Structures are given as structure tokens and as C-alpha cells.
Length: 389
Image 1 (cartoon, rainbow, N blue to C red):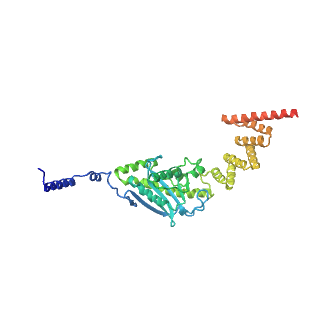
Image 2: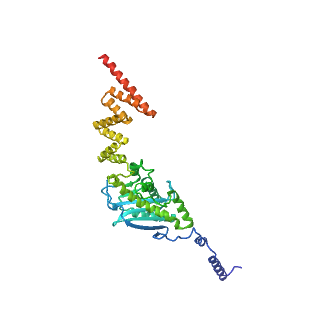
Image 3: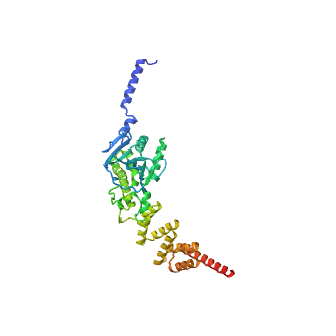
């Protein structure tokens, strides 16, 4: 016998009542740390369900900075510059590496604004990238530290994977001028090292970059933002220090930083000469007077490449009057052999180098021996030709 309609409806109501009393998977997740929605840290706002944002305004560190034209183009005002830095879920590349914290710094209305976007969960990445793309509008120079190699490529990959077409404009990566100017005087060229030795602003209690990915993954489990505070501060300081470092580098290049304990005048002279600035010659000459053999070698080659042989020869001769220098001796021997065709003087110079120089490098010594053998052969050939005349 089939139950009537009234009995069937009563059973359905009872089943619905039981389902309401039984906790669902969704109800259970709300009672666990993993499903719990974290409170916003102080100073942060919710830009989206999965994206936080904060803006810090302070006096402009770029105010009054000089512009050499070698780092920052003269035609682009500071208001069009954008400093950027990322904190990521991994320290290497790859499609799975995600930027979970992005710091931006720019000048606006006389102040310096540091804006940070924090991705508190993966579903918010497309929203964060959309906000980032808006921030990138009207930017004519992107400034970073190792960003040309790492950060910009990572963001470019994330834009591509989220089907958001974007291309970075001109970039200034401060790591490159730091390497060119200070790699011989600093222990290494990390941003933290430049802060300590160039800016005299060592970080205290800073979190090592290698630990940052693990902190974000831990946050995904416990949703406790307290552990993120040092990460936020680390990223914020990266932005501020980049701005301060740029001001310092521009001042050093312009010659306004005098007698800095880690300044390398040879490196500065080479930096300027490579860019066609004649001020580099004056700096190289000062380095030579202080006895820097690098300056002697580089400046002589500079004269040689520019076909100013009289200046190059004078420099080599001045060095050889003081000491039997290998570089100056070999260059002078080349000049005598190939341009003056004075094989006897060239041979005399090579034999002097072999006698007086403690050339421990077997390659260099073999070079001198080979040159000596060739010069003797040329002199002998010339003597034979004289017999037949």
C-alpha cells in the first residue's frame, strides 16, 4: 500500500529538520583555524575578500636629488617613477612561484607613498594583479633591486597566467650600478649590504629573505597575521631603502660624495668613461696619482682605442720608469713592434721584463717568451735581408 501524500510530506519535513541539526563540512571548516577568516592587521584595509592593502605616507626621500642622466633619465620626473619589490612563495623561478606581497613606492603631492598589496589566499591573485596593473598606469620608469632579472619576470608570468596582457616599460635595476661601482669594496652587493655600508642604516631584527615563503605558508594554516608583521616591514624597508640608495648613487656619480670609505674612484672613472663622460679621465688620473694600477691600465687602453697614441705611450713610459710593470711593458712592446717596427727596442724591453719581473703566472711568462722568440726571428730576418742588398 502506497503512503498517502500527507505521510510523505511529514517524512520530508523530518529529514530536513535533521539535516539542519547535523553540521555540514562548511560548518565544520568555520570552526577550524584553516577556514577561519583572519582579522585585518592595524593599518590595513580589505581591497577584496582575499586581498589586503595599506598605504604609508612620509616625507619624500627623493626631494632635492640630483639627476646624472646615467641612472634616471632627465626627461622623466620623479612623479613618473615607480619603485617595486615582491615577496614570493619561493626563491626560484617557475610557473608555480607566486608573489603574495607587492610593495610599490612613488612620489605624489610632495610625499612618498608606499603601497602594499597582500594576497592572503590564492583565489585573490587576479584581483591583486588588476589593482597592480592600475598602479602601473602612467609609470615611465620602473625602479627595483634585482627586479630586471627576477621580480619583473615573475610578475610578467603571473599576468600571463591570469590572461592579463601587460608589458613593463623602461626599468632601472639598482643592482647593476652597485656592482659596477662597489663590487670591489663591499663584501657583496645585496641590498642589505648597501644599506649598512653605503647608507649607514643597518637593519635591526630584520627577517632573512629565505624564511619569508615559509611564513606565508604557515599563515595559510593558522591565519595568524602576527607572524607576517616582520615580512610587511621587510618589504616596506626594501622600497624606502631603494629610494635612498638611488639618491646616494646619483650623488656619488655627480661627485658630491667625498672621501666615502667604500668609494672606488677607479670604478667611478670607468663608469663615466664607458658612457663617454670626459670627467672620468680626471677621476682616473687622480686614481693613478694614488698608485692604482687599474687606472693606469684602463686609461692607457682608453687612449689607445681612441688613437691617441702619444698619450698612451707617455703613460706606459711613465709607468716603466717607476717599475717594470707587466701590462705597461707588454703594451709598449706591442707598440714598438707593430707600429714603430723597432724590433730591437721591443726585444730589449721584453728581455728586461723576463729578468726583472717575478712572473709566476705560466701563461704570462709563456707570452713573454713567445714574443721574445718572434722578435729575435724578425731581427734575424732583417739582418739576412741586409746581406742581400
